[in-house]
Image (cartoon, rainbow, N blue to C red; front, top):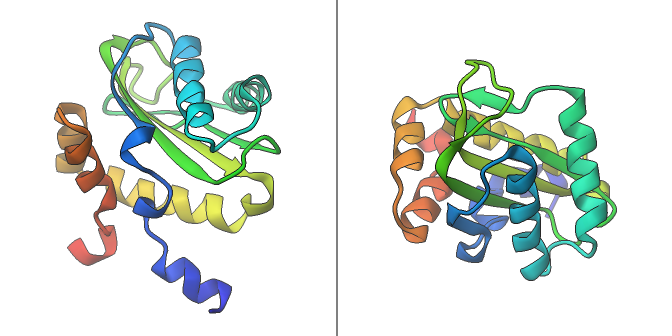
Length: 164
């Protein structure tokens, strides 16, 4: 299968499992949130070094805001410590202060863990798919209100191209 063809068939469901969804995060700060989600990636075997991965995420955070508004943040780390490109999703019990476009705190954090070898194609495809989903206000509202991992998986597994 050609690389372009593989990308067309690519789905967010390929890079997330229910084990990578945390519906009741304990974190109350951005730093705690990134570490909490990093631990989930580590526990799931998607990264091999928590400290290295978290450092790469914080380095990216220093480059510009990842809070995109509507209670959502999309921090990401391209890192040698990533074993398998993945998404991990966390939902905060209480809103977390985060630099964001609408200057509001966030409730849902979608952390991208991208293997350096996948950095170009996979990273861009992932961002495109997530960005298309996040362009839909109903999707955002459903994410913020999702109460089960199954609900969250169902939302993330939608193909935004099919809904136009």
